[in-house]
Image 1 (tube, one colour):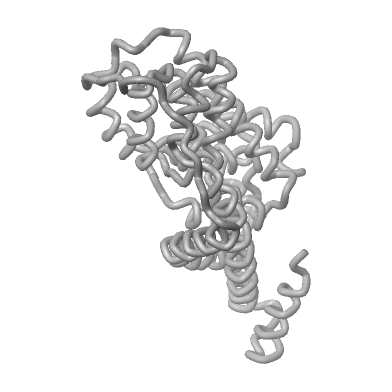
Image 2 (cartoon, rainbow, N blue to C red):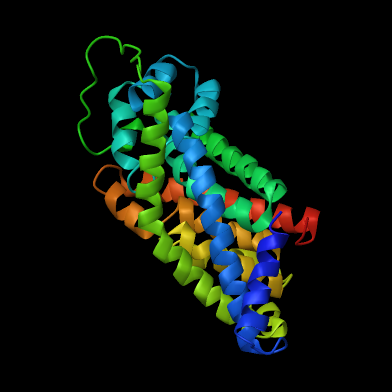
Length: 323
Protein backbone atom coordinates (compact mmCIF):
# COMPACT_ATOMS: atom_id res chain seq x y z
CA UNK A 1 0.00 0.00 0.00
CA UNK A 2 2.82 2.38 0.85
CA UNK A 3 5.58 0.92 -1.31
CA UNK A 4 5.82 4.24 -3.15
CA UNK A 5 6.52 6.04 0.12
CA UNK A 6 9.12 3.49 1.17
CA UNK A 7 10.86 3.94 -2.19
CA UNK A 8 10.77 7.73 -1.89
CA UNK A 9 12.25 7.67 1.61
CA UNK A 10 15.00 5.33 0.39
CA UNK A 11 15.79 7.62 -2.55
CA UNK A 12 15.93 10.63 -0.24
CA UNK A 13 18.22 8.96 2.29
CA UNK A 14 20.53 6.94 0.08
CA UNK A 15 20.67 9.02 -3.11
CA UNK A 16 19.97 12.62 -2.13
CA UNK A 17 21.64 12.56 1.30
CA UNK A 18 24.14 9.96 0.03
CA UNK A 19 24.11 7.92 3.22
CA UNK A 20 25.55 4.44 2.87
CA UNK A 21 22.84 1.83 2.33
CA UNK A 22 24.12 -0.73 4.82
CA UNK A 23 24.78 1.80 7.56
CA UNK A 24 22.86 1.92 10.83
CA UNK A 25 22.17 5.62 10.30
CA UNK A 26 20.73 5.07 6.84
CA UNK A 27 18.47 2.26 8.05
CA UNK A 28 17.25 4.29 11.02
CA UNK A 29 16.67 7.50 9.05
CA UNK A 30 14.88 5.76 6.18
CA UNK A 31 12.61 3.96 8.67
CA UNK A 32 11.90 7.23 10.53
CA UNK A 33 10.88 9.21 7.43
CA UNK A 34 8.76 6.39 6.01
CA UNK A 35 6.99 5.56 9.26
CA UNK A 36 6.22 9.13 10.33
CA UNK A 37 4.66 10.08 6.98
CA UNK A 38 2.75 6.79 6.69
CA UNK A 39 1.33 7.04 10.20
CA UNK A 40 0.40 10.71 9.72
CA UNK A 41 -1.50 9.93 6.51
CA UNK A 42 -3.47 7.07 8.04
CA UNK A 43 -4.07 8.87 11.33
CA UNK A 44 -5.63 11.84 9.57
CA UNK A 45 -7.75 9.65 7.29
CA UNK A 46 -9.06 7.29 9.95
CA UNK A 47 -9.64 9.92 12.63
CA UNK A 48 -11.56 12.02 10.10
CA UNK A 49 -13.82 9.11 9.14
CA UNK A 50 -14.47 8.16 12.77
CA UNK A 51 -15.05 11.81 13.70
CA UNK A 52 -17.55 12.19 10.86
CA UNK A 53 -19.48 9.09 11.95
CA UNK A 54 -19.42 10.35 15.51
CA UNK A 55 -21.41 13.46 14.52
CA UNK A 56 -24.45 11.18 14.30
CA UNK A 57 -24.12 10.26 17.99
CA UNK A 58 -23.83 11.98 21.34
CA UNK A 59 -23.68 10.87 24.94
CA UNK A 60 -27.39 11.44 25.54
CA UNK A 61 -28.22 9.17 22.62
CA UNK A 62 -25.92 6.53 24.09
CA UNK A 63 -27.76 6.72 27.40
CA UNK A 64 -31.13 6.41 25.68
CA UNK A 65 -30.06 3.26 23.86
CA UNK A 66 -28.62 1.66 26.99
CA UNK A 67 -31.28 2.69 29.49
CA UNK A 68 -33.64 -0.28 29.26
CA UNK A 69 -31.37 -2.95 27.82
CA UNK A 70 -30.91 -6.29 29.52
CA UNK A 71 -27.44 -7.01 30.80
CA UNK A 72 -25.85 -9.02 27.99
CA UNK A 73 -27.23 -6.98 25.09
CA UNK A 74 -26.41 -3.86 27.09
CA UNK A 75 -22.81 -5.02 27.53
CA UNK A 76 -22.52 -5.55 23.78
CA UNK A 77 -24.03 -2.16 22.89
CA UNK A 78 -21.95 -0.31 25.51
CA UNK A 79 -18.77 -1.92 24.19
CA UNK A 80 -19.67 -0.97 20.62
CA UNK A 81 -20.46 2.60 21.67
CA UNK A 82 -17.04 2.71 23.29
CA UNK A 83 -15.42 2.46 19.87
CA UNK A 84 -17.01 5.68 18.60
CA UNK A 85 -16.48 7.78 21.71
CA UNK A 86 -13.28 9.88 22.04
CA UNK A 87 -12.20 8.88 25.53
CA UNK A 88 -9.04 7.63 27.19
CA UNK A 89 -9.27 5.71 30.46
CA UNK A 90 -9.42 8.81 32.68
CA UNK A 91 -11.68 11.01 30.54
CA UNK A 92 -14.25 8.19 30.23
CA UNK A 93 -14.91 8.28 33.98
CA UNK A 94 -17.30 11.31 33.99
CA UNK A 95 -19.50 9.56 31.44
CA UNK A 96 -19.22 6.40 33.53
CA UNK A 97 -20.83 8.34 36.39
CA UNK A 98 -23.45 9.73 34.04
CA UNK A 99 -24.42 6.21 33.03
CA UNK A 100 -24.90 5.23 36.68
CA UNK A 101 -27.10 8.30 37.23
CA UNK A 102 -29.14 7.25 34.20
CA UNK A 103 -29.91 3.97 36.02
CA UNK A 104 -27.80 1.95 33.61
CA UNK A 105 -26.55 -1.26 35.33
CA UNK A 106 -23.00 -1.11 36.66
CA UNK A 107 -21.81 -4.01 34.50
CA UNK A 108 -22.88 -2.22 31.34
CA UNK A 109 -21.12 0.96 32.44
CA UNK A 110 -17.92 -1.02 33.00
CA UNK A 111 -18.16 -2.50 29.50
CA UNK A 112 -18.12 1.06 28.19
CA UNK A 113 -15.30 2.12 30.53
CA UNK A 114 -13.14 -0.74 29.22
CA UNK A 115 -14.00 -0.47 25.53
CA UNK A 116 -13.71 3.31 25.13
CA UNK A 117 -9.93 3.56 25.66
CA UNK A 118 -9.14 0.06 24.40
CA UNK A 119 -10.66 0.64 20.96
CA UNK A 120 -10.31 4.40 20.49
CA UNK A 121 -9.63 5.78 17.03
CA UNK A 122 -5.97 6.56 17.67
CA UNK A 123 -5.20 2.97 18.62
CA UNK A 124 -7.15 1.68 15.61
CA UNK A 125 -5.45 4.09 13.22
CA UNK A 126 -1.99 3.25 14.55
CA UNK A 127 -2.61 -0.49 14.40
CA UNK A 128 -3.93 -0.26 10.85
CA UNK A 129 -0.98 1.85 9.72
CA UNK A 130 1.56 -0.54 11.24
CA UNK A 131 0.09 -4.05 11.09
CA UNK A 132 -2.69 -3.83 8.48
CA UNK A 133 -6.40 -4.52 8.62
CA UNK A 134 -6.24 -8.19 9.71
CA UNK A 135 -4.37 -7.52 12.94
CA UNK A 136 -6.49 -4.42 13.56
CA UNK A 137 -9.73 -6.37 13.12
CA UNK A 138 -8.51 -9.09 15.48
CA UNK A 139 -7.45 -6.50 18.05
CA UNK A 140 -10.86 -4.78 17.90
CA UNK A 141 -12.64 -8.11 18.21
CA UNK A 142 -10.55 -9.19 21.19
CA UNK A 143 -10.95 -5.78 22.80
CA UNK A 144 -14.73 -6.02 22.47
CA UNK A 145 -14.63 -9.55 23.88
CA UNK A 146 -12.74 -8.38 26.97
CA UNK A 147 -15.08 -5.39 27.49
CA UNK A 148 -18.27 -7.46 27.07
CA UNK A 149 -17.14 -10.39 29.24
CA UNK A 150 -15.60 -8.26 32.00
CA UNK A 151 -18.66 -6.01 32.20
CA UNK A 152 -20.99 -9.02 32.22
CA UNK A 153 -19.07 -10.67 35.09
CA UNK A 154 -18.97 -7.45 37.13
CA UNK A 155 -22.69 -6.96 36.55
CA UNK A 156 -23.54 -10.46 37.79
CA UNK A 157 -21.68 -9.90 41.07
CA UNK A 158 -24.10 -7.17 42.28
CA UNK A 159 -21.40 -4.75 43.35
CA UNK A 160 -23.42 -1.52 43.42
CA UNK A 161 -22.77 -1.28 47.19
CA UNK A 162 -19.11 -0.54 46.39
CA UNK A 163 -19.96 2.78 44.72
CA UNK A 164 -18.68 5.23 47.34
CA UNK A 165 -20.31 8.49 46.32
CA UNK A 166 -24.07 9.07 46.56
CA UNK A 167 -25.55 8.86 43.08
CA UNK A 168 -28.85 10.65 42.57
CA UNK A 169 -30.85 9.03 39.76
CA UNK A 170 -32.03 11.32 36.98
CA UNK A 171 -35.73 12.14 37.16
CA UNK A 172 -38.07 10.89 34.45
CA UNK A 173 -37.20 9.12 31.23
CA UNK A 174 -34.30 10.10 29.05
CA UNK A 175 -35.33 11.56 25.73
CA UNK A 176 -33.66 10.78 22.46
CA UNK A 177 -31.67 13.84 21.44
CA UNK A 178 -31.82 14.69 17.76
CA UNK A 179 -28.70 16.00 16.11
CA UNK A 180 -29.70 18.35 13.32
CA UNK A 181 -26.52 19.10 11.42
CA UNK A 182 -26.09 19.65 7.72
CA UNK A 183 -23.70 17.39 5.81
CA UNK A 184 -21.26 20.27 5.38
CA UNK A 185 -21.41 21.05 9.09
CA UNK A 186 -20.65 17.42 9.89
CA UNK A 187 -17.64 17.52 7.57
CA UNK A 188 -16.43 20.75 9.15
CA UNK A 189 -16.77 19.37 12.68
CA UNK A 190 -15.06 16.12 11.70
CA UNK A 191 -12.14 17.99 10.15
CA UNK A 192 -11.80 20.33 13.13
CA UNK A 193 -11.80 17.37 15.51
CA UNK A 194 -9.20 15.63 13.35
CA UNK A 195 -6.95 18.70 13.44
CA UNK A 196 -7.39 19.05 17.22
CA UNK A 197 -6.50 15.41 17.87
CA UNK A 198 -3.59 15.51 15.43
CA UNK A 199 -2.14 18.56 17.18
CA UNK A 200 -2.26 16.70 20.49
CA UNK A 201 -0.55 13.51 19.32
CA UNK A 202 1.82 14.30 16.45
CA UNK A 203 4.77 14.96 18.77
CA UNK A 204 4.17 11.60 20.45
CA UNK A 205 4.22 9.95 17.03
CA UNK A 206 7.51 11.63 16.12
CA UNK A 207 9.03 10.71 19.49
CA UNK A 208 7.79 7.13 19.34
CA UNK A 209 8.95 6.62 15.77
CA UNK A 210 12.27 8.26 16.66
CA UNK A 211 12.92 5.77 19.44
CA UNK A 212 11.68 2.98 17.19
CA UNK A 213 13.97 4.10 14.39
CA UNK A 214 16.96 4.02 16.74
CA UNK A 215 16.07 0.47 17.80
CA UNK A 216 15.46 -0.47 14.16
CA UNK A 217 18.85 0.78 13.04
CA UNK A 218 21.12 0.15 16.00
CA UNK A 219 19.74 -2.61 18.25
CA UNK A 220 20.35 -6.19 17.08
CA UNK A 221 17.33 -8.45 16.67
CA UNK A 222 18.97 -11.06 18.90
CA UNK A 223 19.07 -8.59 21.78
CA UNK A 224 15.33 -7.81 21.54
CA UNK A 225 14.36 -11.46 21.18
CA UNK A 226 16.45 -12.40 24.21
CA UNK A 227 15.29 -9.70 26.60
CA UNK A 228 11.65 -9.45 25.52
CA UNK A 229 11.17 -13.04 26.57
CA UNK A 230 10.72 -14.48 23.07
CA UNK A 231 8.30 -17.39 23.38
CA UNK A 232 8.90 -17.83 27.12
CA UNK A 233 5.77 -18.47 29.18
CA UNK A 234 6.25 -15.30 31.20
CA UNK A 235 6.66 -12.88 28.26
CA UNK A 236 2.97 -11.88 28.08
CA UNK A 237 2.77 -11.48 31.86
CA UNK A 238 5.83 -9.21 31.86
CA UNK A 239 4.39 -7.14 28.98
CA UNK A 240 1.10 -6.59 30.83
CA UNK A 241 2.81 -5.70 34.12
CA UNK A 242 5.02 -3.21 32.26
CA UNK A 243 2.07 -1.69 30.42
CA UNK A 244 -0.23 -0.97 33.38
CA UNK A 245 1.85 1.75 35.10
CA UNK A 246 2.85 3.48 31.85
CA UNK A 247 -0.35 5.41 31.01
CA UNK A 248 1.34 6.38 27.77
CA UNK A 249 -0.22 7.90 24.68
CA UNK A 250 -0.94 5.11 22.22
CA UNK A 251 0.57 7.24 19.48
CA UNK A 252 3.92 7.02 21.23
CA UNK A 253 3.73 3.34 22.13
CA UNK A 254 2.63 1.82 18.82
CA UNK A 255 5.78 2.69 16.79
CA UNK A 256 7.85 0.97 19.48
CA UNK A 257 5.63 -2.10 19.28
CA UNK A 258 6.14 -2.19 15.51
CA UNK A 259 9.92 -2.32 15.87
CA UNK A 260 9.87 -4.77 18.77
CA UNK A 261 7.79 -7.25 16.78
CA UNK A 262 10.13 -6.86 13.82
CA UNK A 263 13.05 -7.60 16.12
CA UNK A 264 11.58 -10.75 17.66
CA UNK A 265 8.80 -9.95 20.17
CA UNK A 266 5.77 -12.16 19.56
CA UNK A 267 2.71 -10.34 18.26
CA UNK A 268 0.40 -11.53 21.05
CA UNK A 269 2.88 -10.24 23.62
CA UNK A 270 3.02 -6.89 21.84
CA UNK A 271 -0.77 -6.55 21.61
CA UNK A 272 -1.15 -7.47 25.30
CA UNK A 273 1.26 -4.67 26.10
CA UNK A 274 -0.81 -2.20 24.03
CA UNK A 275 -4.05 -3.35 25.69
CA UNK A 276 -2.55 -2.94 29.16
CA UNK A 277 -1.30 0.56 28.34
CA UNK A 278 -4.63 1.71 26.90
CA UNK A 279 -7.21 -0.07 29.09
CA UNK A 280 -5.55 -0.02 32.52
CA UNK A 281 -3.49 2.66 34.22
CA UNK A 282 -2.47 3.80 37.68
CA UNK A 283 -3.91 7.33 37.17
CA UNK A 284 -7.24 5.70 36.31
CA UNK A 285 -7.11 3.69 39.55
CA UNK A 286 -6.38 6.86 41.54
CA UNK A 287 -9.39 8.66 40.06
CA UNK A 288 -11.66 5.65 40.52
CA UNK A 289 -10.55 5.43 44.17
CA UNK A 290 -12.66 8.53 44.83
CA UNK A 291 -15.70 6.85 43.31
CA UNK A 292 -15.40 3.10 43.88
CA UNK A 293 -14.29 0.89 46.76
CA UNK A 294 -10.81 -0.59 46.47
CA UNK A 295 -12.32 -4.09 46.22
CA UNK A 296 -14.26 -3.14 43.09
CA UNK A 297 -11.25 -1.41 41.52
CA UNK A 298 -9.08 -4.46 42.25
CA UNK A 299 -11.73 -6.75 40.76
CA UNK A 300 -12.00 -4.52 37.68
CA UNK A 301 -8.23 -4.49 37.13
CA UNK A 302 -7.99 -8.22 37.85
CA UNK A 303 -10.68 -9.26 35.38
CA UNK A 304 -9.45 -6.98 32.59
CA UNK A 305 -5.81 -7.85 33.25
CA UNK A 306 -6.58 -11.57 33.17
CA UNK A 307 -8.52 -11.09 29.93
CA UNK A 308 -5.56 -9.28 28.36
CA UNK A 309 -3.24 -12.09 29.47
CA UNK A 310 -5.47 -14.76 27.98
CA UNK A 311 -5.75 -12.84 24.71
CA UNK A 312 -1.96 -12.54 24.49
CA UNK A 313 -1.34 -16.22 25.12
CA UNK A 314 -4.07 -17.36 22.72
CA UNK A 315 -2.83 -14.97 20.05
CA UNK A 316 0.74 -16.23 20.39
CA UNK A 317 -0.38 -19.86 20.38
CA UNK A 318 -2.63 -19.60 17.32
CA UNK A 319 -0.56 -17.26 15.18
CA UNK A 320 2.92 -18.06 16.41
CA UNK A 321 3.68 -14.34 16.55
CA UNK A 322 2.72 -13.50 12.97
CA UNK A 323 -0.23 -13.37 10.63
